[in-house]
Amino acid sequence: MLPQDIEAIAEAVVRRAEAKGLMIATAESCTGGLVSGALTAIAGSSAVLDRGFVTYSNEAKVEMLGVDSDLLASFGAVSESTARAMAEGAVARSRASIAVSVTGIAGPGGGSSQKPVGLVHFAAHGPNGRTVHLEKRFGDLGRDAIRLESVRTALGLLMDAVSE
Image (tube, rainbow, N blue to C red; front, side, top):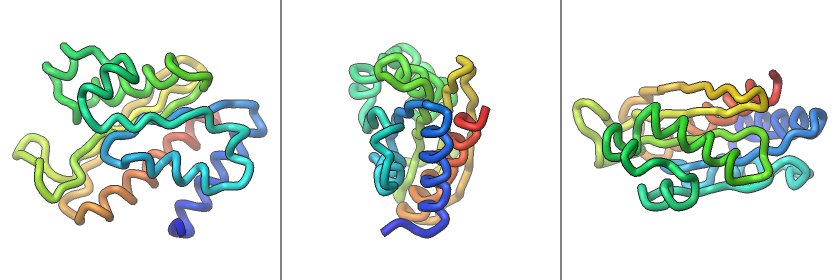
């Protein structure tokens, strides 16, 4: 059962994409498929969701999305560059014209002073060919809360992309 606000925005994304004839893909790391899960909770989502990539490891990002391994080595998995490459790779490797990506540190461990727990990078690649990036620092809210806030943010980016 989804929180009501997440269900509402997921439904709005599905309806808007359907009205515009747009297909969506997701590229998720720290959310582990929760964004595509929120979309598929909506009846009729099969008309707009092409596929979801869960790319938790760096190897998966490279193999499934075509993220450059040199980019990962230089900037790390949790970075603007990686989020952009994930969203662009999801469009390139699917039938979708829109993709959203999520990569971050949900905790409780794994953070550092430069990349603390709660740091999440998002990107959305839209039908206009433009990629938008968003960085959020949720703080150490706990793993579940960070993941839910990440789903909310990703769905918001998708809504913006389908509304262009």
